[in-house]
Amino acid sequence: MGFVGRALEIANMVKICCIGAGYVGGPTMAVIALKCPSIEVVVVDISASRIAAWNGDQLPIYEPGLDDVVKQCRGKNLFFSTNVEVHVAEADIIFVSVNTPTKTRGLGAGKAADLTYWESAARMIADVSRSDKIVVEKSTVPVKTAEAIEKILTHNSKGVNYQILSNPEFLAEGTAIQDLFTPDRVLIGGRETPEGRRAVQTLKDVYAHWVPEDRILTTNLWSAELSKLAANAFLAQRISSVNAISALCEATGANVSEVAFAVGKDSRIGPKFLNASVGFGGSCFQKDILNLVYICECNGLPEVANYWRQVIKINDYQKSRFVNRVVSSMFNTVSGKKIAVLGFAFKKDTGDTRETPAIDVCKGLLGDKASISIYDPQVTEEQIRRDLAMNKFDWDHPAHLQPTSPAAVKQVSVTWDAYAAAKGAHGVCILTEWDEFRELDYQMIYDNMQKPAFVFDGRNVVDAEKLRAIGFIVYSIGKPLDSWLKDMPAIA
Image (spheres, rainbow, N blue to C red):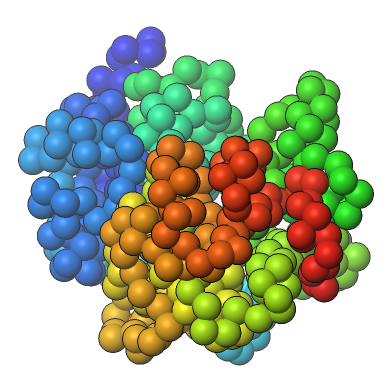
């Protein structure tokens, strides 16, 4: 059968339901709906407020281009609903995009993925299904999760046949819609049986509406699951590598931007992900590496586990090194001093604060009794206060399990303007690379600050020489140090 015939056949039969209306489920399903107008796509979630936001004017996540896609399809072939069981029962393909947080207690605490939400989703699918289903892992899951899900479904099958596929997402926040429109690759893993291959083909036909055939890769289940963890581990490793070099650059007078540019010119290495910073953040990198560490340990590979654990250690070191540099530069104390924090999201063009380095930097400064004033163009005051009040790894649990009214930290204020944040401050810390921070009137900021006035650039966004000409003492990650900073070495 030709491509057009196959596409028509699948369009007539397929209803898609996605469990989980978060950063992955929402945008992915919106793009599938846009590109496959004849397929009905329903995104379901138990959170009524989240579904209400998806159906309203203010979407629950900020992602460039997402608004347009949702508004084009919503009410036509894209729907958001809290009626989970009805839509799961009707669907042919069910994407499961629920949280897989790092366990905070019990076996594997601090490393292993907590599959509680995955398991309850699988049991619910088994309960309500009356027709054959293809169940697709969309959340990042540990290797061999598919096997566990398969067991739950088959032991509760009531004569329904299930095929489990792994279809990991490779989205970068801030460019997710573009990544979905023109992906580097779509990866589909399935069982190497006739039924498994048919299921893979069915999902492949959905993506083939807009993704070239040669970009749709098919593998066995375990390869697909491990590829996602490995990809994130390799990306995080690049950031930790350049950050490790940034510390050496500061010690020797080298410039990390020049070193990274020279290294990135090697075609085997390439230029991407070689920007030194205060550290990586986001929902995936740390979680996936900890997961990889745990799987290695469970499979009797402690040396491999230790290798990957080091990537996270360097990331933690970079954040504490930054805090130490701030404190030591200011006569070894920030107690009672106002520090402006510009940027709280983990990267620009997203409002996402999960595992953002800003949390650890702020907590480090608060530990030394600083008074912090925070500005971020996309993050709400409520979110900032919640993040600073939360225990590590709590962010990945549903909102109703998180602290409801975060204790207000008296030394923290949140402003909606970079100038207000910096007014009367002793120092400014730039922790997110928002474009607007390059364009600020730093002369005005300097005039309204305490002297000596410091800028600690954790993202290398400002022109340090221009700021020094104004009168600032500037610390840029991995760049040659001001004589002031050399005289006050940071002990990390």
